[in-house]
Image (cartoon, rainbow, N blue to C red; front, top):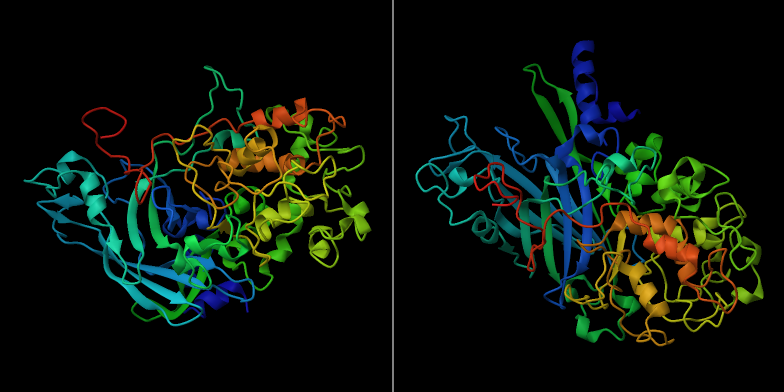
Amino acid sequence: MSRFSLLFGRFRTPILTYALLLLAVGSYASSHREAPLISNDPLADNTDVYAFKSPDDPNTITIIANYIPFQSPEGGPNYYSFGERIRYEIHVKNKATTQTDDITYRFTFTRNNEDPTTFFNIRLGKQNIKTTYICEKSVNGGPFMTIVSNGVVPAYNIGPRSIENKTVGLGATSYNDLLQQSIASATSGEKVFCGPADDPFFVDLAGAFDAGNFRPDGNTVNPPKDGLARYNVHSIALKIPVNLLQKDGKSVSQAATILDPDFVIGVWASASRQKIKTLYGGGDIGYDGGWVQVSRLGMPLTNEAVIPIGMKDRWNTLTPYSGNDLQFAKYFTNPELALYMDDSQFGGAVPSLKGVRIQTKSLGSFDFRNGKPGLFGLKGAAALNGTALAESAFGGILLPDATSPRAVDLLPIFYTGVPNLAPYQLATGKNGNPLAVGKPFIHNFLPTLGDMLRLNMAVPATPRNDPNFSSLGLVWAAVLGLTNPTYTNANLQFIPNMDGFPNGRRLEDDVTTIELQAVGGVVLAAVGLWYDDFTPGGNPVTPNLAKVLGFSAGVTKNDTTLKATFPYVQTPWRGYDYTLKARY
């Protein structure tokens, strides 16, 4: 049966069939308009997912899933809101032995027009498109239990007369007061916020999709442009005690080390729409109760910049379980972006990526360009015994064949997480042998073979005022571990930014730059597979590595600040701002 037949059954007339087919195009398909079909269904479009140790509370994890991209603050009279008949879900995995979610949070929203006699969204203390929600939770595949029964989404931040005016508006003290009042305490111990917020993601969209024409060296004539500046999204934010997420109910104080493998979780989010069953004689659309996933997101930019356009809609309909994502593995083992970082391919045509060049003869012999062997020549060798690359460990996945060089680094980042095993430790302490045991700096290994954010909850948060705090996340933790005398020993110790992407994802993390650096081989270099200009006994931060570390995607931070307390995302941009300042 075809996808459209499954969704819509049999229709009464060819004209009605065609009309509903158009609706299907708008509802069956994530990040910001990243797939063809979901771009026509913004209410169900999952733009970003974040999972991080709460910076003001070491005993909790914050998970944020954002939806509805490119919301202009001035977008009246029909302001943005979560959609009805959509299931918004946040999925948590804490066991590698199960085949589905271990924890699921489900949100369903209801809209109400309090005064349908007016064309204003807010008038005389009443609000149209007033949105409430129910949050349900399922644990270990059990039934969904309601944990928030009457959650309130704050009104859209239309302007001062609508929000603060006591005569014609809501009479609120401030918009931020509305936001704080909407934070709910779930019966199971979480804090919950659902509502509009500044979009915390930042990227030069125009440059990125002009065939990788980033502007890292932007100037006054052609400066990098944040394509998401002054746009809002709708956020679902959860602040969750660690013991509620840890598979055995342990608190963070019970972790054996800051890289305790029992504290790893995987996080992804989705949106699903109800299947349309038939058309009745009165012209109404009927629903049969079934649901179809139309959007999903785990690791940032996967569907946007890794999955090819012909597979994007399919990727959105699948869960990251049961081996579903293995069909897309080839796009990670030989990523398209790598072709623009290789002078023997298209590197010369994309000068903005000139500082990011992949190793062609690391340590004199290992070539990691697309289609090259990478480390495959070592497959089965005794030198791999005791490492993650051994056949008795994960060699079958990480060294699959002689033409999948990035299965050794990019694939685990997206599909399994990275284990605290050789060779995935810093080159510090390895004495020139990348296969030796080095300095531990990551363990977020959860081998489900599917795309999701993976976070080790035992890793402390880096204070945001720490002088070493960096939006380069784990890449900068590696730099400190290789070069800073405080950390250049082989011992396990906390290095600032060990809690950064891709060990979870903080709101501040520059994921676009990090992922481009990763495609350019920076992870390989960190573990001792140095760039081609390295000489034995020399400085590991060679000119080539320095270029990669100095590369940026042009836009390196959000266009406004973040909140210091939950929900951490900033107040949404105001539609009408009579102060003429950037933020009211």
